[in-house]
Image 1 (cartoon, rainbow, N blue to C red):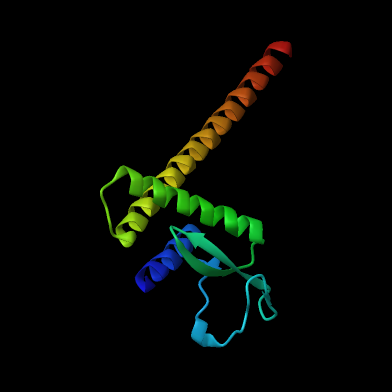
Image 2: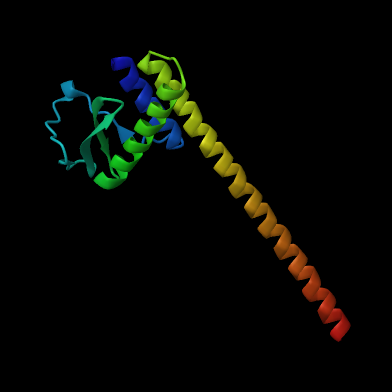
Length: 138
């Protein structure tokens, strides 16, 4: 299960564009933080979430509800993969779930990029039309 924890942390770092949004605290670090407790040094809180039947302490600056929603989403994606495949390895289920989540992310980013491109073209066409109307009116 340790390899899944490391994988999950790496996945969360990927989603945070290289900056770890969430961490899985090292129990040997001696931070002594309990569920819902704040780390006074960096303002991060630790919350315990359940993903695919395993509890993970997750430390981050986001509020508890946000972290729970993120964990529930990952859990749902892992369960979706598990139901639709014959995989027995939790790590393989997690990797396929991560690929599905990243696929969703990339598709949304592409839609957003297309929307920005359309907005820019509309702005250029609007400016051209205004110029033509101004020329005709003059």
